[in-house]
Amino acid sequence: MKFTSVFDIIGPVMIGPSSSHTAGAARIGRVARDLFGRQPKWAKIHLYGSFAETYRGHGTDVAIVGGLLNYDTFDDRIKTAFADAKKAGLEYEFIPETANTEHPNTARLVIGDDDGEMSVVGISIGGGKIEVSEVNGFKLRLTGGMPAILVVHDDRAGCIANVANCLAMHEVNIGHMEVSRIERGLTALMVIEVDQNIEDKVLQQISLIPYITKVSKINN
Amino acid sequence: MDVLFHNVRELVERAEQEGKLISEIMIEQEILITGRTREEIIQQMDRNLTVMEEAIERGLQGVQSVTGLTGGDAVLLQNYIAEGKSLSGDLLLDAVSKAVATNEVNAAMGTICATPTAGSAGVVPGTLFAVKNKLNPTREQMIRYLFTSGAFGFVVANNASISGAAGGCQAEVGSAAGMAAAAIVEMAGGTPQQCAEAFAITLKNMLGLVCDPVAGLVEVPCVKRNAMGASNSLVAADMALAGVTSRIPCDEVIGAMYRIGQSMSPNLKETARGGLAATPTGKAISKAILENGGLQSIKALQ
Image 1 (cartoon, chains in turn purple, orange):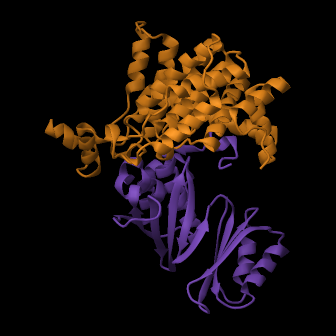
Image 2 (cartoon, rainbow over the protein chains, first blue to last red; image 1 turned 30 degrees about the vertical axis):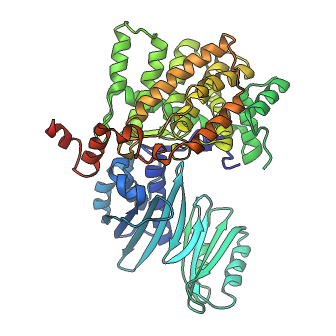
Image 3 (cartoon, rainbow over the protein chains, first blue to last red; image 1 turned 90 degrees about the vertical axis):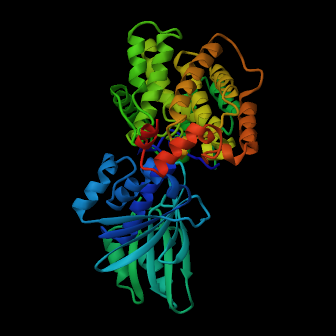
């Protein structure tokens, strides 16, 4: 069964006009912000496929910027997101792309500030549901439906066990986990889906583990 | 996954055997699947109902979409009803206007509750708030209306599709219309089997409906499709309540809808490459909006 809850059918509450192009887009923006860990100062928003062709009419543009400002799918401020971004000191640029992607509703968000930058690829798979398919060049599959932790680390033995131990100490149960690396011995990424929202002190502790370079989270 | 029903036959049988409403079976299944309490589930649906009511109120005051393609028709319909000259009947037109109101708010980037999707969000609330004036339901009965709709939508989503990109508009507005018809029947005191008949009659008459949005936007023909979906569901509900049955069982109609969707050309499934989107005017509107900076450029040409 693809749909499990009655609220998959009667819901979500959202700003129109399209569950894929608007609600999904807002969620992509918000997940990117969550992963970055703070409000970015600038965003280069590359749009592909149907997103690139109809983003103005569907409000995909304001929805993504709204998401970057931490607005939810039903937040009325999505409509004033451009003006709000100006006030919040967030500069953004839309770059419609012609390249074909695996899914027609794909966005690549490159966001950053004076302290760093991050690249997130999100796809809107229908009914407001999304997946994150790439972070900083790492391929992954993250649904955003469950709270998750992303850990960038050096590719060394024991790193994964140490992170898992830290979560166990805080009685955080792991639902799904993926590890990927671009090249052996260099940087790697752990994607850990967990059952409950993660407190900041847990992230703090993980960040102190040797060889961990960056920790970010998505709360549900 | 453990569920109480996989198809409409099981849903109706369970309701009949246990002497319960369809809405009750849906609530019980939600408790079973999510482990949440009845109160939490009812409260969430109550909030969705409030969102629907507020969207209708806003739409009836008049809204305009960003592109200028849609907006204001709900007001025209209400004014027409007030003149007392409606041919098809005030309740039916009221449902139509409220379905339009919801979708105009959706197109204008207002807050709506996707039912089952954003593009088909008008039918279920539109009929609910029109029938409300006739049947005077309690708040609880109005919430039940949404659970009954949801029960049928659940079956369609899992056995066919509720997405225009996957199954055409029959899957979106067609499903929404069937969901509304079943819920009207329950609210009007019909049996679970009559709910299923109403769903089947409605969906049968929405079969083959293509998804051909002009410029790919959820405006033309989506807003008016919701209007016709709402009227279709009211007529089918009346037919079922009168004792009319569908010769083709409900689940087989849903199966037919799925197979029609599968055999439909991709041009007719939300790509904006066929149907109304591919008419000369559809293409001109699309060009004006997507390439030339808005509808003003069309008006300037005329």
